[in-house]
Length: 253
Ligand code: ZN
Ligand code: FE
Image 1 (cartoon, protein in one colour):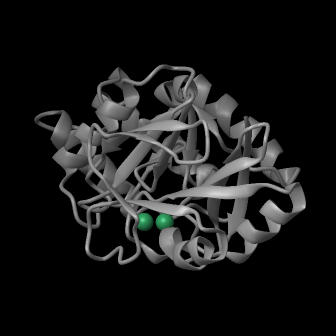
Image 2 (tube, helix red, strand yellow):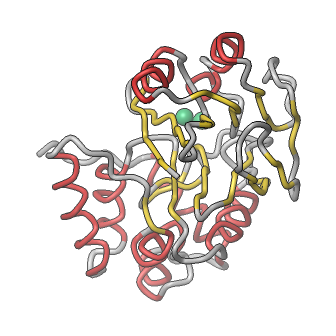
Image 3 (cartoon, rainbow, N blue to C red):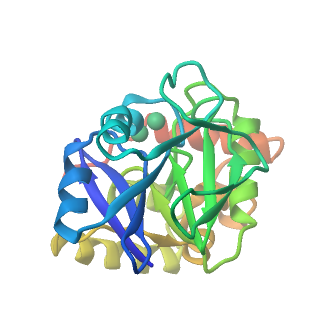
């Protein structure tokens, strides 16, 4: 299987994946043109489109791509996503027509109320729920909902490759360092991401095992985070952490 992070818009990634015969699917195509270009370059045929949530930077190119290729659009149940051939919900196992790929749908409310993640083949496509060394903003959900969603993702196999919707990793590392300064795994991750970005490479996919060691939003029970964020319980601690990130501005280097 080939996996490609196609840069789109300002800092989005559209994930494109194909089997050896060139049957491909795309996740969260915020625009069509970069996907069309990547498909043409490799002689891949788009069989399916999977969406994680209704935001325009994740669905903006879906209808145009579906019209151009005949690919079926798979989307969560939300009227704000107008174009969909297959609606999906938590626990569904979706076999993508015309390809050998099957994915499990995991409901992950928090960033938006109908957000889903797609898990299969050792890959997790999680949109704006889990970022490398960060997590999405709470636009529609509560801290308790988002924490429960992240807990479900954290329980997947540690070797899972995390395919996030945005290249936010380096900025996330700066914030993570501010709340978890003695974390050696975090320092190592930041150094390697800095090198990847300097070479013009994506910092993604990330490994879930690394995220469990580095990502403060997956470490609300770790002693360092418990000490840094006084709170009555883990939900309150998570809420504090998310609020702190919302107000965080890194000092320009
Ligand atoms: Zn979003
Ligand atoms: Fe987004």
